[in-house]
Image 1 (cartoon, rainbow, N blue to C red):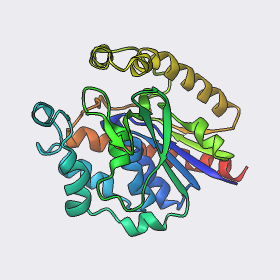
Image 2 (cartoon, helix red, strand yellow):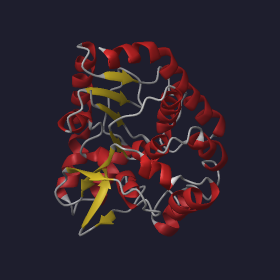
Image 3 (cartoon, rainbow, N blue to C red):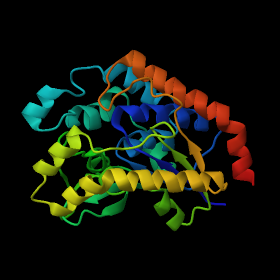
Length: 281
């Protein structure tokens, strides 16, 4: 058996997944292959370094901190999230990330990013000792909220633009058992929102990205439908929130975020016996 875990993004809503992965850590359920998109990979690395509770500490201590995110950072640095604080000061000083434990993880770890020129998803292996977390930042680089991030010779944006839930890639990597952690309730239907329309205008010089943004809702909805069919057939195990407690993409309320974390933890516990049976079957 080769177990793959795929974590959807969703910015603050991905706090749900942090609760799920802490429950998985309690049961010592670890993948052979892990792929995350946007906040899915940003939070996912703490699971792979087996730092149970680390994400919750960050959520409760820092996400409401003015240093973490806000319009003032967008106006000053053109990034809604304060990248030096989120991806440097927190992991390297305030809530230390365990690089050695992450390096010891024996599986493969990839982040999904979107090439700004081709508009296609690329699946980039996450370096084990990059204290700037460049690949993670690139995967999180949602239009409007982030600037494109350079990796090698090319620039990239949020992987969710081109492949929101890359479980198909986990299957291509040879995973015959797959856990997919979603950040939206079952039955959610994506539509083009105001931010999407702004993004298409902002990136009009990059027609492939504009096409990604324009077609994203339809592709996402088709992906979810296929995922639900595969779940029903017993091919994939899905964990999704029953409620997101009103948490928005850039939610910073410690109370609401803690509720969503607990939703993830309890949802994983509720499904744990079924999950174990799935892994044994």
